[in-house]
Image (cartoon, rainbow over all chains, first blue to last red):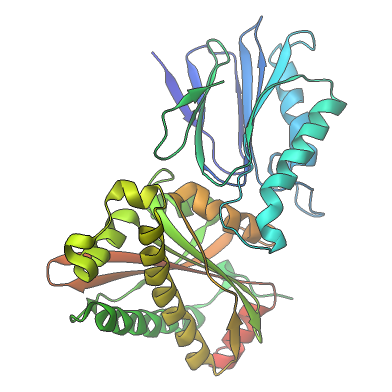
Length: 158
Length: 208
């Protein structure tokens, strides 16, 4: 039996229960980052809003530059190891066309997440980012597969 | 010091509610003209919501909606988002176009005709609220060319919520129900003034 956990904006979840399915519904320019240790079947997901931290705001899971290492720390405390860790990311779409800098936030979110993963030496195994469609993502902790749904398309698994 | 939504008093909320009323009235009148039939409205609900609850209020993060997004400039700066479910937008199009109404699939695939019809509806409705705000405050408000998106509610609102989240954790949402005979159509108007702009609005109305 699957146990669905929906992760809201600036929230995260880590678990070692293989029945857990971590989900973000209707992901636009935010980024969903999944980390998974395949040997221990420990995984985590975070719903990132912005590329850079804002002084005075204390929730690290809101910002790409802090969320990646914060999630990694949480995962390590659940028993994940550097040896078997991998990352999958989705989101970062540009929902409205236009020239406003606001519209590029998705792209910047993705860039910062990737840079942070690189710093931590976590291999990026799947990357479904950009474009102009929203996504719903489901991360299955039983095997680390990530299912991605967009409107009018068949779900894909990465 | 900026005033934020969650700290408004009852009088200030009432004033914003009144802007919502007038805006919804304008929107109903505009819709009546477009469809050539009398469109009435229910008294709008004005809500101050935590950001994370906004998609739920719109019918769920995966609800298929159209969103029209604009930025305000001039005396007041900030963002406007108008949201309507695809089903309700199709009802309007059906009154407007009859048998020529695009199918749901055409709308979701952003077929050219569907897109321009959706864009038109979104523009008319969002500018109705904006002109109410300008009239009520007496402020000169400019706005950008509206941008349209058709997608899941969560994805449509997240870019705007991101913008709000830089400053606070609440949004002002005006929910209006339009009524044309047996058709009931809900529109959601979100106002996101930049820091300082909410104060200018309230000051212009005379409730600060």
